[in-house]
Amino acid sequence: MPESTPHQTALSFDFGLKQIGTAVGQTLTASARPLGVLKARDGIPNWDDIQALIKDWRPALLLVGLPLNMDGTESEFCARTRKFARRLHGRFGLPVKMVDERLSTREAKDRGGYRESFRDDPVDNLAAQVILESWLHEPGGVVEP
Image 1 (spheres, rainbow, N blue to C red):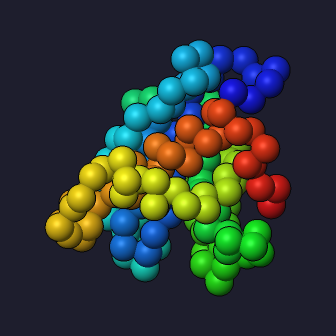
Image 2: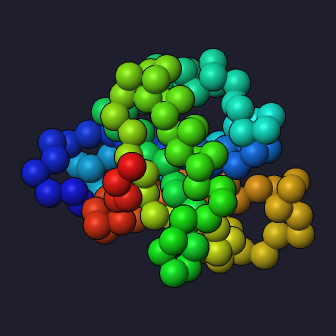
């Protein structure tokens, strides 16, 4: 759990062009749970859906998974992910942190068990949970802008 952080609620996002996974967690118990998957069109979600999540959960912080390459360099998709994070901050005025999300989808697939179709039964919300848990338990995974 992040040191010297007051107990707070956080929402996390696993950004994608067609869908965005979401999860909620809090520092009191250092736990997180998946919420759902938001549909997106070319990476643009229905912002009202995100506003509803923020209204319901009242997070102090938003986390966005940054898809770094395995060697720690930025992937081509990082620029789009950072843009999404800037839009979250701009629209809602909440602090946004980027979290190294390497292998989060693989872990989410392992947690979800075998699935025939990830399109019909996505794991993006589980990946968002993994991202949030990594921030709770390994604060060194925060990537500076």
